[in-house]
Length: 82
Image 1 (tube, rainbow, N blue to C red):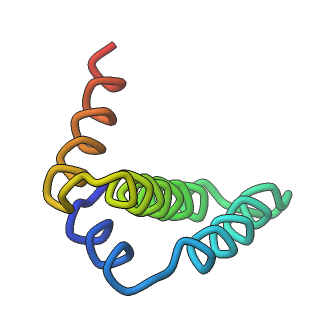
Image 2: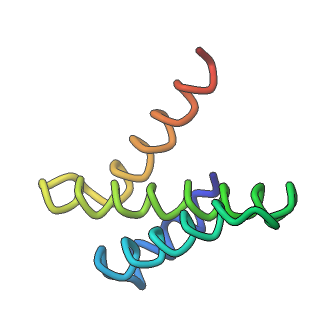
């Protein structure tokens, strides 16, 4: 998870574009020939896209962009600590 990447995705891409990209990446990760390195990169991209989607949703509900980004980061870090 990289907050600058999530911020960039949030600021430059619509939720619809992010969802389409997410579908493609998820399909790519299911190919038999996908290497471990490919899966690591794809997983990182999926996490960042999901973060941008969550930021979009939180901002749409009235949260400030900075707070939405921090909220997602805390959520991810909280799940890692468990």
